[in-house]
Image 1 (cartoon, rainbow, N blue to C red):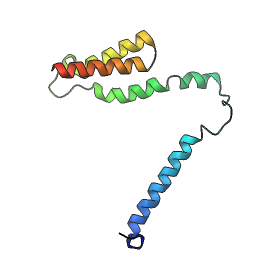
Image 2 (tube, one colour):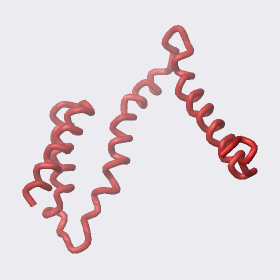
Image 3 (tube, one colour):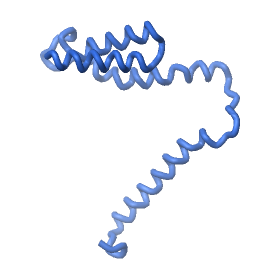
Image 4 (tube, rainbow, N blue to C red):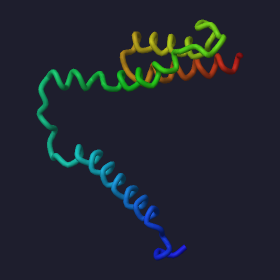
Length: 112
């Protein structure tokens, strides 16, 4: 298909994709532009330290609902979340709960 054969809707979609790509690159690259670390208030630094945990909770929370007809304790996701919470309480980082939760989920799903 030649460029002249593009319809108006195709051109709009193409410009939309280009625009979204530029916005994405700009919003992610803006943090790389300063030559020094920006001075942020202490309360903001403390708040940003919870961002990875908040993102992880936002991904996990919808999965906590048990499947239809399945008790919560029989759902592999329940034990995965329990393992992730214990790993977080033990290590206080993001990697340990991710690894523990994934390992328990895969193991319990394989044993089902």
